[in-house]
Length: 175
Length: 175
DNA sequence: CCATATGTAAAACGAACGTTTTACACTGCA
DNA sequence: TGCAGTGTAAAACGTTCGTTTTACATATGG
Image (tube, each protein chain N blue to C red):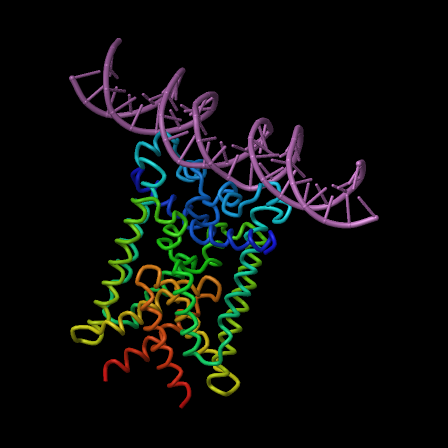
């Protein structure tokens, strides 16, 4: 396991649990088990490190969402939350923390959300077996985002509620 | 307009736009137009100031949600976003930023979300005209939370998508 | 007209911030 | 044997953090 992987993995955990601004470089170097000199050589800066973390998380997250039905989409979210916990969306949180003033972070967030929305639209189209349904896709996206954030304080059961709600909407759109 | 009101109002804007940690006391004193000494006399500390801000926002937000139907609930969210913009939920953002390590903030967030969930359950019960429907209430909450957060990057139109989705679910529950 | 309260302006506090530098140890290849 | 390359440990950089303090101005009420 090379140093950049180890650094990005531990940084993702620290940033996710304590927030971007509140996570000092001391905590990151200690968690990654390397000196600050090595960290800066590999990561460039704190903001670049966060951008790297977000890019890797984007890949990992979208990989988990490689499904062909809306029901499987919410099943995947259940799996994700069970494995990672429910702390809301790291992308939106980070973007809000930095107020969009950090270009590399703002770009990583925008890229992720665009890809995410596209993925949802594709899943809805595959599920319906036609060219897609933009309104339904938007509703599924809202349910997904809502489940992600409501799970923070209502628990993982809200994903089930979102899942059955989505099933109703898909069923309606199919006929 | 007394000083505490002026302070809380401007602090809410600053915190909401730039985040809790990233908002230094200098920016707060300057925005509120008062010396740091006066600020600390009235607010106690930065964390207490944020807790005060959250408590006031909780009152204002729930006031806007004093409606009797699910449709009016999402209409109220549309109004809120038009007036305040879409930056996600300040409560969840602040809680995530502090990692729950600041008791007064964690308590304010927990109190708000409990009241919010109770309000939704009440609106669903009023709309259905019966004792309520816990599953439907959870689904409406997820749609509301989802619209709040999706609006950040998809625009206020997602609220309309959530609104029509909620109408479908309510209609189904009524029969 | 003095006393008290309440405010401002600004300096100062120690701590923590992100980042860079210094000094030194270990590897692998000529 | 020697020389890069890559790592660590730790001090130091200047800045900013949240908070307190000092010194001084202003208004109100007995």
